[in-house]
Image 1 (tube, rainbow, N blue to C red):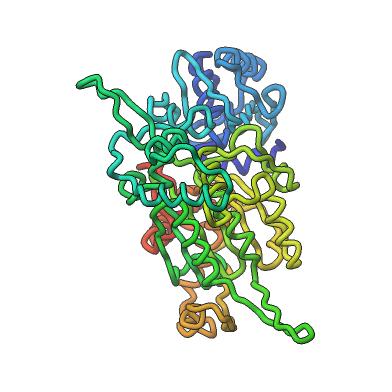
Image 2 (spheres, one colour):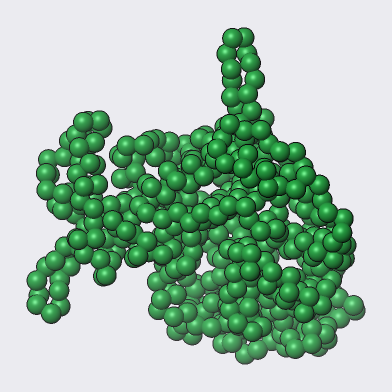
Length: 512
């Protein structure tokens, strides 16, 4: 990291990934700070020689001693915290010597210091609660959420007709008739039902597991509010303006996949041309690839994250599918981009049952990512983009994606996000109705609103890269005051584009 890069970080103030220290703390506290960053999916940077209250660059009198304290802190963490560079770095900024320690994003190891698991939340480092530790273990696939029993559900909450249809399909189509005719016994074998002991009477009672409820439940949404897909359609390319259609899809995961696919099909324009005596229809995006991405999101998402739904954003120039949770350990973004993914579902019970259900939900086990890439190439479209800004995101572009640019500061003037100036001709129901409501030209009578939408557009792009934004980061990004930043962000909250997390200085805004 060079001087200019470090100055930009310091100007942005403390965040969830940046912490300032004028002098190194005691080794025990140093270990806690490092541990907090090491357990974060974003990692973080400790910068020594900067006042945390004023962000003033003071420098260090004894940089070598600071490096020694960092190394001591590393050794007090179990296991020792890795750094991006082999050792803490010395950087000269404005003639003053600073020390920085960069901690990489967590790769699936839970770090401990002083008998506690620490985590960076906002601008604070706090010990993780039991629930947070359990959430972490679920997220890393170290314990199985899908096979845990739902304490609030009983067998009456299962739709046994769905189980019977599944049995019949196995016997008639798949060619693997089950020797177990009793639906409940079959569900036990499939890990969709488990027997638990009632502590009040010592009797063993069968209860649905989380996988059983998601696959065969009558109304899963009452037990898992997070198990839903939120589909949003925008006519512009940024989502700054209010959405034109929004649907919250619940039900079993099979019903969610089918309804999400129908939503994508509804808004994907289809062009037709004649080849010889045949009429050939070609969608703007490969619908089978979109469906495969939805199936992947349902199978691989982290269901233990409360309040986190799968979100599909349909923009004028792209489709984004956001899946709660990160890639499971041993899978990397680089492998996905190269089409070298391996079949390693986070939820193997759900994946196994989907494979054997009517609808061909898991017909491409282990080859889904290469299929998606090949489908995009067949239409001469850019390869799908995979990213992890705090969650897993796949983006399908209708045209080459814009070059990524550093998002640091912008002025108050910005281009208005383009609308669909030309109405899309489509044989898909619903498109023409929305086209009739779309303005044909941009209004030139609202410069202030255009400037605000330009700022918001830049902020949304920043969030797609970094996962969230704070009020302070919005100010730095757009060059506006704190009150203007608050108004801009709250407008996006009111429109259902963002949601708030945290309070006070640690408040962040994330994509809804």
